Image (tube, rainbow, N blue to C red):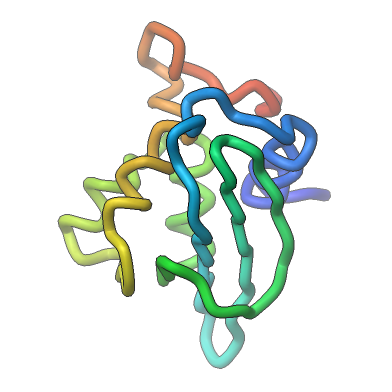
Length: 123
């Protein structure tokens, strides 16, 4: 069974281009910490063109959080910026990139509008 985090990143790979990030370039690494293990996702953005890998490489911005919290963010059950403000996530590097990338995450499943549901999400 594939988790919501993997589905989220697989969907970004399938898209290949995200118009909401057309003016954005940079690298964002998400470090999912669980005990002594850390799972990495690296998102490279070049004017909306997306490349996803699971590399542990240098990045302009590094987000650290738990796999459970990121799963909630990837499904829209949790809002990433709110989690950051509560201290449930850490950010090292260019925080502006976090704000820009937040646009591609789904909104709450209960909301209405263009962000209400992630295209790759199964309900």
